[in-house]
Image (cartoon, rainbow, N blue to C red):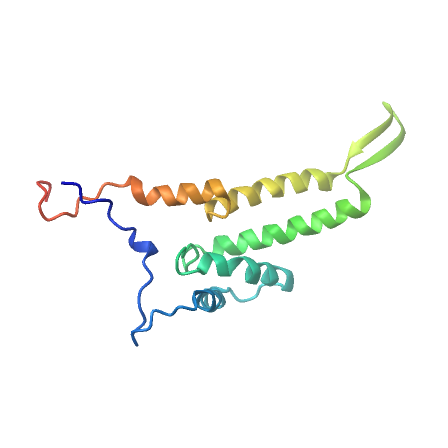
Length: 158
């Protein structure tokens, strides 16, 4: 007889001690993000953290905790660096012209453009790690279903 799939215990939102389920999940997410916020962040990094952390701290997702908050801080710092590089590229352009060199006049790419490309790759990788992209969310959701649970009492393996 089919019993169905076991529930994902990480997606279960526990009730509070006073019996109220705490229906204001957004307020709980903001409070948890503020609780986990590391000290000593610059203003821009803190702004990025305050913008991105609450959805990850939402009780239904719960992807940000004490263990990986340092990696999330690095993600916020990397996003701040990317924004600074984009400001430079928006002001100065992505290329510049050289005059009369050994190979004549050339149009070259700015070093900031290469740095922005590298930083964007780092951001994309970290966004996937936190499940902040569709592919990353699918990968994190699939992990809970791949394992085999040996904890049943009626099995022959204990």
